[in-house]
Amino acid sequence: MNRTFKRIFIFILLIAISFAFSDSARKVVVGFSTSVVKFYDDKKNGIYDFFKEHFNQRDEIRFLREENKRLTEISYASVGFSEKLNSFLKEANVRAYEPQTKLVRVLSYSNLGDYNKFWIDFDDFNANKVYGLLYQGYSAGIVVENLGRPQAILQNDAKSTFSVYIGESKIRGITFGAKDHIEVKYIPLWTKPQIDEEVVTSGLDEIFFEGIKVGKVVEVVEDEGFFTAVVKPYIVPQIPGFFHVIIK
Image (cartoon, rainbow, N blue to C red; front, side, top):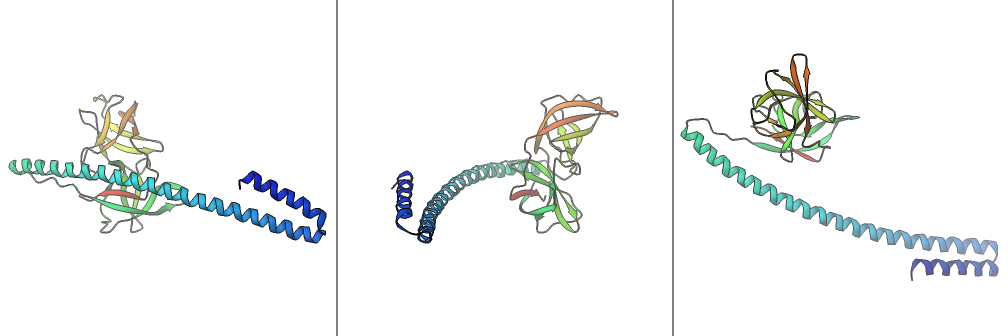
């Protein structure tokens, strides 16, 4: 019985009842009929929501599996490259290059209304160290000590600073968050940063290792004896459930 026919049937039934029974009886029957319709619609919507949620979860699981496969392949390639690099460094009598990251879980915002700072679940946190924060392979911010706990600060916050290179000539600068973008400050005037040049971490501050992508230059301005490059970051994370932290 489709919905239109069902409602017409109930409407005719209610009219018949209104002529055959007293007012009290009509109230009882109408109330019962309304409850039946509501029960039917609630059950139908509940079943629809159940299957919709099931299929959404199925799609999400498929996406996560594909993403895991992609990241696994990248991980294997990185391990292979690291082995070759370290073999070369060993021949050159240079210390091995062994960057390490740790997956950390987001717990909560640090302060209500401030969406750039949050607490993370980070075992073996060293309160005397500043850590680099990664998301989807790009720079995301830093991790510092606050109230004795590890606090993550996204890179679009003014307190999130780290050292970067601009372009192939590796022009040096320091990042400062500026809401929807990043500003690279203290660039010497004798350098020539260009629009569309890529910005990567330098590793000189020992927060990130060298080469993590940050974003691209969209504007260059002169500011108090230095250049400042306005950078559009590759990502502006909205605090997902997990990040990676550079621990070595």
